[in-house]
Length: 132
Image (tube, rainbow, N blue to C red; front, side, top):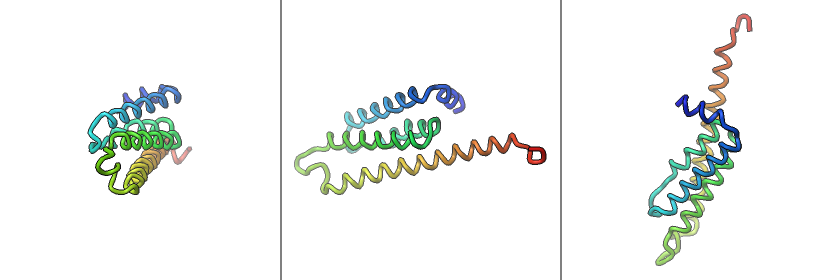
């Protein structure tokens, strides 16, 4: 785990963003080419959480929006139109988008808080309370 972290932290933000978007496009393509009933949600988390850990919460939210859009487009393109259009109700599609984005946002917040706590603990480990 440390090796991956060291490898990614030594990269520039544009490189990391390009890698994350490329992975997201790859997963959306896999989503499109597979059975529409299969879920690739966990795969979308890999680039999102990687970006949050290295580049921060804001870039993670941006990538979550891109991932949700990629999933939604893939889902709409692979659902059969006949005999029923996409879902039994148009609200189901909207609900699924909100739920997926909600999962991404919760995990982005948790990973961001974990990183902040880790950095705080590292700083406390270096500080002597008697002499500062």
